[in-house]
Image (cartoon, rainbow, N blue to C red; front, side, top):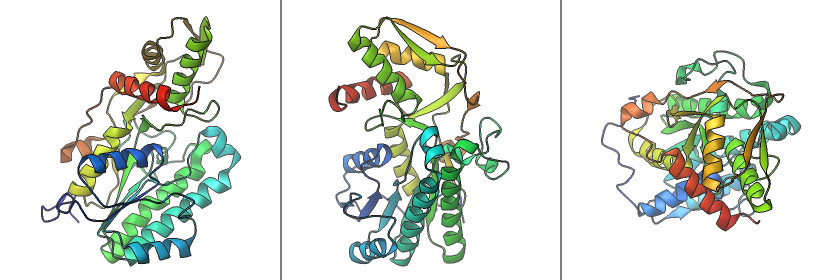
Length: 322
């Protein structure tokens, strides 16, 4: 299997080909739908959870038998933060395993030309080398707080590889870094660091608060990718990549949590003070993906962090109930 496409195949050749985007209402799926529509694809097959429960094998098989999509982008997953992973480990492993297994197997059985499976950077060992190369997978123990989710995602990568090896099924995997953008989860308790900061600064601004307290020292380094850049990478991989190995998808740029907080504060327009509670834990000191393989194929992110934050805050103001 070549690492990149031989040139005979073009994802863009038929804009009317049926594309099933699983998980089209989420942060990632909605961005992929926006991207495909903007490129002129006209035959997207979308189902809400109420219309199609991907954990039910018979329902998924019936859907594929009826619709027969040409392409599948698998962005459906049960996701959540540390608290959710610790509280509902059985759901995180079982639901994700069921979704992946049903979709990947039915895609193969019903003649899908190409499938892209999306995972997350949490598949890597807790103490992986930095930046994290694809080869770090399965080299050491995982972060215990989200291993249930990580194990499911690793199984998805391996399932794509197994179906490629045994059946020559064109199934590829992409592993994005920390994502943000429109349709993010801004829930006060179980959102990730960036939307959580945005919400807190916004509420502090609205309420005329004098200060916002943030956990830790602000020293850990994190990498962020705008979800529209990920959608761009997804379309790129659908067209250009047919390798066995999963590909990292990141921005390649790191910011400290302190720099991020200052940037969000500026974008939101909060005039008060930012206070760091260094008695609270910092988390992993550094988490950066090595995305040089994808870069080597010719893909680069385009959205700068500040521009992306401005765009996300605009979406927040228009869509999140105040």
